[in-house]
Length: 270
Image (cartoon, rainbow, N blue to C red; front, side, top):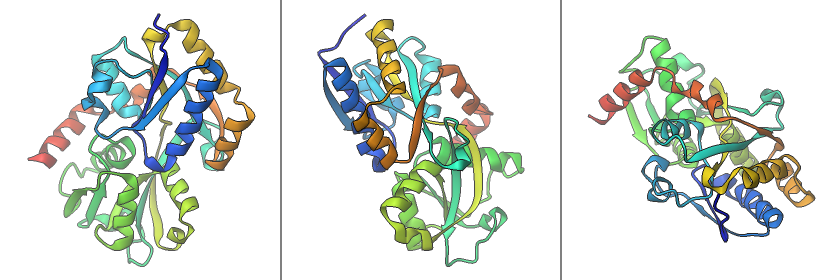
């Protein structure tokens, strides 16, 4: 067991939820009486030296890179909790969806209309922005050539703007990220249309370094399941109903057809 003098935290998730992750981090600092340091990840978690060298104590991370990482490094990270969102579509479960969006002023009405169009995605390693869509295309027999062009935006928020601005015809966005973006910028609701919903998938979890020891990890989990008034205010602001304890094995469902996804990514990069 290693009790840190400072809780080192990173978010690999969408920046429009950074303030929420900051509220969680500050709450754990209050509970544990530890100084905290949170920053936004700037690279793929699977390529981040801080993660690879076990220099992070806590992380907010998408389930797909998490489960892929833990297949290689099995004794470093442990899941704590995941948010359960307030919307009725989430059915009081720690899940999210991937919403396929188009410009509201386009003539694109259904998923089939996206054939031959320009698709933008946040990152090849993203479950919501890329993986789920590839799964859908493979299921439909479109292993390649469905879109005329695929371009990487670098973030869900940029993908949304590209669809609004006409740089891309469509994108697939994490439903939680999209809903928060619509809260922050209500005018977007008139500029976007959802033509397909993919999922659900397990909600991105909060993970902790196992070297912190069982006692401290249990205290962190219990604390997040019993938020104080200040954290509850942040949860309300970001549409979070509660936290649910989650286990790493729950995210293995994201590894569907791994060989197909690797092949598809290889073809895309060639």
